[in-house]
Length: 224
Length: 204
Image (cartoon, rainbow over all chains, first blue to last red; front, side, top):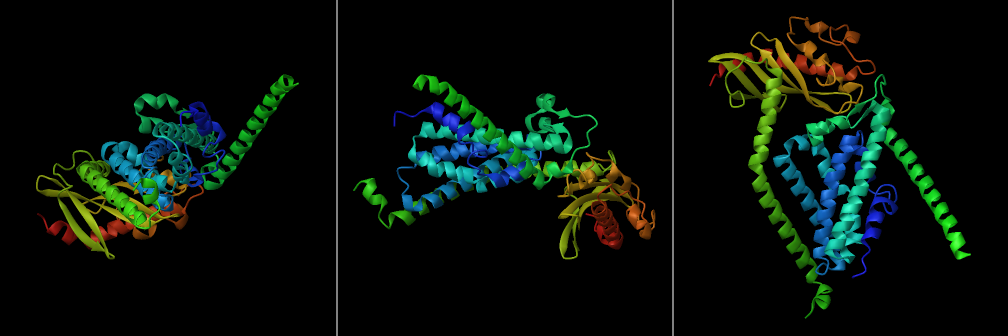
């Protein structure tokens, strides 16, 4: 395939086919970790790393794997990758692991990763699969961070709390505290995640409709 | 025979699956082997840090991670770390656990030889964020109120939260969580008193 449209892949990953906002996948880790923007960011980056590796590996072996056993093969690959990431982080990035440790294992059950192996990497070349992994991963990270920030802002009155623990002291400037706001516990609890996600989804629909209207409006004179 | 015809053969499927599983387990074994020492070192460092948190600075000069005694408590093994100054036993550190509002709360405590708590820290919990998590020292200083308390001060019936006529504060909107921590610490002190001979006697 020489006519791979990288722009299309990137646009799909970040917006049109966004894991959370369009495909509605990976909602379990999404709800579980997005109590703060920092947690969302960490989980997003770890998922992206696994997604890219899984996509590349699946793409490499796509000619060898038969259709009948592809799903168990992909599952074994993904589970192995996640375990390796888990062990490596525990050993060499121990401080980060203490913040994110619980979530790393959750990446295995992230259906978005198997979904991309199954729907993209198995049909496309290595480079395209890697680009798809990066785009989908960043789209997922964006969704996690956005939902985390919304819940954290309304729930606890902070933004990126403890970001310096995750990213190093130089990122302390990201941390914001709204003075005199006690927070709304509901937003930190699971119902708040569903409520916030609902509003974000509605927001995306509105933006998409506006974009479609504008496109239709600009296309009309050209067609006439 | 080319790959396309081979791929549909029955024998190809288990063979492929087997090879993938073999390679995956091989990779895992290598990574696990390579990371094991670093993980063990990092965990020992974590343990040392949390033990040092509950132990007042300068109280002990031995490597209390290595000076341990294991006791049985209700069918579970409790590892007791012994802090010494020279030869004299100054304090012991151990973990206790109690069921909180949602799941187990793990508490690390240090007790001196008179049965007084030197420090208490919550290691792990799944209490409600914003209500029950005030038991963490970085959210609230509540857990420091255990310092210096023993089974004689306050008296056993006053070992409770204020709602239960005890001396310890509860949190607005969360009584079960602090109640569990108080119960855990009290249980720890009782455990220490009951087994003091075994804990101190087997001096290495």
